Image (cartoon, rainbow, N blue to C red; front, side, top):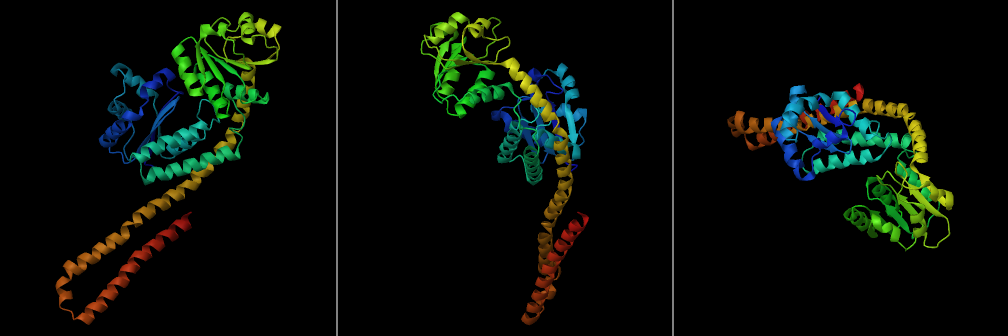
Length: 408
């Protein structure tokens, strides 16, 4: 496995705001990968880009030194000032051989993620690989590596509890909502169009909720989220004038003062008296305490959800030992598989080589001697050559397989 290399730029060494400098968009991916592949004579390569890591997985016999990493980054033409380049080079993690394979397994099993156990990383790695495979950047070697990576990750997610309990506040908030058995046409007000509300909206939309009204300070962002959800968009100032009623309020803004005051809440109720739901994922809360004191409300807030998330996270970490044992087992299983594949690829050349030897012998080396033979002798010679050719092809194939079986 000495050919396998990984250069990793991750949240563990690099600030997330700086990590964005290493992200490659789809439009320039082929050009950039071609540039490093040609310059460094890299047979196979693929690129992984997520919200907290950028990694280059490739094969090659080159020695990975700080000078190589610096040249690699410069060749990719990232927008990094020369005076800052050395600092980034020092933060790049280099993995080779078994360590590289182990690293790929660990990230695909989400053992290296910001949130341990989040299965999305496996889908992201597979998609990254497929994109590069379809563009012709990978071959048989990385195909074999990725096949075993996927196999191992599926075993970890199936045989351990590392991903069983949700640990993100958004997923926990959605689960709490589902426990209230809301009907699919519930009227849902979404206050704020940031990433948190976008995420919980995707959960709701996936489960067929469709009656949305989105409020945001920047109206264009409210329009964008409402467009995705098939709902209505409003500026945040319109919240006090909204008279269409609601069943659920989901709020998450950056405001330092409560957005939902009791006055606004009474206006939103518009005379309705049944118990409503407020999901407040803001810190500090967007909901004024007076709203909770004076009204019947199912209140779901980020603080209580965070306590559950922390507890679930601790349980996930307890599954790390089991996951790492599965990874170790799969690494040991993969070594003979890789050896066998190398022999298979090498043995592909045997028939071609033998046929080439036969061609040269018949048409060049012994051509004059064969011409002097009568037709019967030529026929016998042809039979002998055919027989020998088949044996010379089959015997080394059988021997190679026997050696692999005995060694494994």
